[in-house]
Image (tube, rainbow, N blue to C red; front, side, top):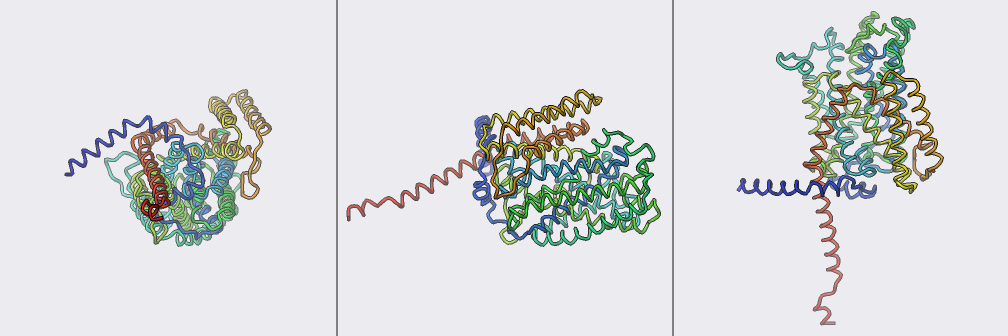
Length: 574
């Protein structure tokens, strides 16, 4: 019996594969309307998520999600190897790019209050495949970054308990490859504990995050104040000056520390759980990016003031810096505070990643059981558990340096796509301009950004930089003049369009090109794998789901018509 079922399934699947070209043609560029996304697609989860969050919850979730990640994980290695004391300038550049991207996210989230974040925005704008591609990259970015951050939790906790060696609580396994041979069981325990907490309730998780974030901001203020007080301006210029690796080092550093701003986009995934999303989302998303950017820059500056850049520790940088200025008690305190901040950031990031996967499951691009929302807790239980186990598995083995640049390129690519989608939506879907004109502008803008970036990367040719800078400004200004933008004054929209979104496109392209070739190779392999999954599974699943829903709608209409038609016997009696 089982053999017959398996044989039938195999024949059915082979038949589906034979239909792949036809289904790809029909599904790759298929889009949904916001009304369909907010009603028809959302109902597939069974139960609705509960709207319990307010604007201050959103700010706390955004700030909490970003603070623990960047400054404690990336500042040390970037200052030591890439930028020198000018690491705070890298945070400023990355912060500007993140702010512009956050404006694009905010416009979408106000108009499309769905849990899918960038996945939903791009699927509604550019079609199913682009949305899926972005969603898969976001999930990859979240899982890898959460695993990396969880391992940093172990390092700072070691310092908090007075351990001198960052790997003191890890178990070395001989025979495994370097970078995968230090097993981190505390990181696994932390991830599993947070996973169980998120399965229980979003509101209680948000309240816990709010408490931790308040203490964390106070803790940041302590570090900044002490760093400024005990630091010396001489450390900013000695040895080698403010930027010993040059302007290139500062910009390369900006691309790496962009990893630190992962978190604000998870606030947009909570759109289905926010009271009054039209007002709360702009305050929460943009406000959290501004607050975090200011704190990052001051924290990086305080670290550069405390010790010369060539003495900054690659691991647990802030704790070791306080040890070197003679404040060992502060070093232990910072280890504990950093650990608390990392817990808060993991809580928010794991909250967001589950909602992304839930939305992709609703679209039937991954197995549908991942889209289910638990009726009593109002949380995407299956998605939360599945991604929690994946994150814990990676955190057990993989060192930070292996995944950090892979995370940055995935993040930058998704933000680049969202900025393009913002312009396309505003000028084509809202203002009703011809798509060809807007697409041509986006192609020219991207090409100009690539030209500038390659001129910078290849010996920094001044004529190339000047030409492509001027051409970028000219392209944006010409589009702004020739193609007017119309939008509703009742709902929040990105101001001064197309400039913020266009500059975001330019910066994301530029920061991507500063990453190493290995990052692009790994990204290429990942892109091939997720595309193969879409071709082998996703497109067939969504095609069949659409067929079933169309048949159901036809059946409902038929039933309604049959009930409205009079019975023959009734006619004869009449």
